[in-house]
Length: 174
Image (cartoon, rainbow, N blue to C red; front, side, top):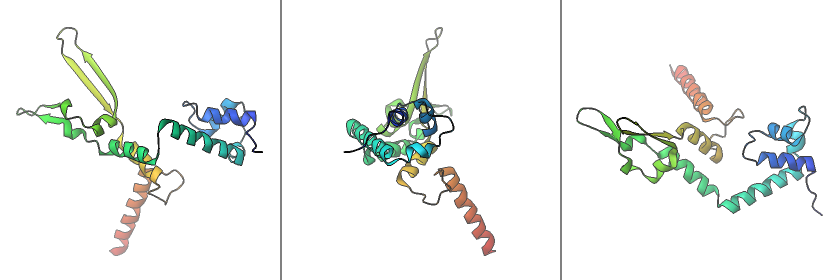
């Protein structure tokens, strides 16, 4: 008979999936564990790992999320170029032509704020786009593009390490 997580373990797992909890440590605290409890002592348990795997699989299946979906969405964000929407007038002023919005641009929009001046009636639209660097970082981490890592899987750090290696090669070639 398959063993189930304890009540406390299940609370920690549920907290991990509540959409508000950012870390496993925070999930432990929400579940009522002592603040000194090591994350690994709970989340490294085979029973807990299996329950998390089952929960992730169920969520992915329920919402139709798979690897292709995630990679496709992140790629759209990375490929969206606000420059495609800019129209420059003869006087040098610029404005956005929203008719040029592509699915990639729409996927990259994080928020839209429309305001109207009560006196002039002039409407202003402000688009906030998802940060491309964060999307690239998520994409590379998801695809494990940079195997060499100091544990954080951060794109910026990987690029900086690469730059440092190139500089060292340039110095050794002189």
